[in-house]
Image 1 (cartoon, one colour):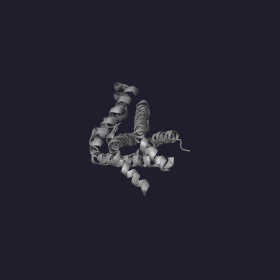
Image 2 (image 1 turned 60 degrees about the vertical axis):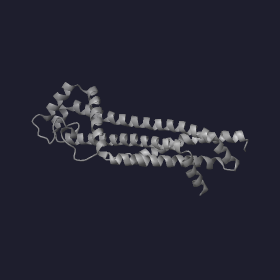
Image 3 (image 1 turned 90 degrees about the vertical axis):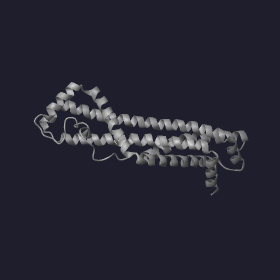
Image 4 (image 1 turned 120 degrees about the vertical axis):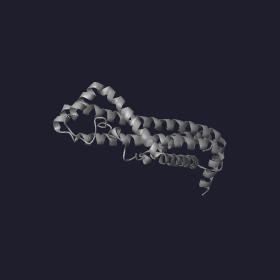
Length: 251
């Protein structure tokens, strides 16, 4: 019980840096869940593209092999782009966390020394510091999730536009505009479908969406953020306690 009491009191005593930690955690959560949701949206859109191709006969599909390959490659590249951005967000969180831990370790040097002098072992001290930061991360995570839930429709519109823009950029590098028009005309020649040439690659481009995006990456964001939080801070606090023990000449 005293372990929890110390952690709770420390949260109040160091409230300013921990408030900054809440904001950083919330920002990471928003970025991570947006990127993972965008990744899922892109994968769903790619699946929809494959299903729309099934409405064409084999001959038509073969005549547009270059177009289909280009579109599939574009979808794959966009997914990779989202995931690369996600890993960058993890790396940035770990870097910020590392610096944050160094700052707090220096600020709490006397506190660490006091714990060691009264007989607390390194594991207890490090666990307390990690628990405090875990509470901060959970609070920031929860706040960010509430914000995302409240603005899901706005997020949906922005992700649709972002996904379409990235796909167009990738397609421009794969096939020229003239070739794209020529191949789509070939594909649609004398064929009736429930979608147009404009909505072949992106289904909702030709009209409004009936559903909205579903937030994804809840557990992935939490576990990824937790790893980026725990690993750097464990290293910093372990070194801080070890150095304090040497200065105090404790066994």
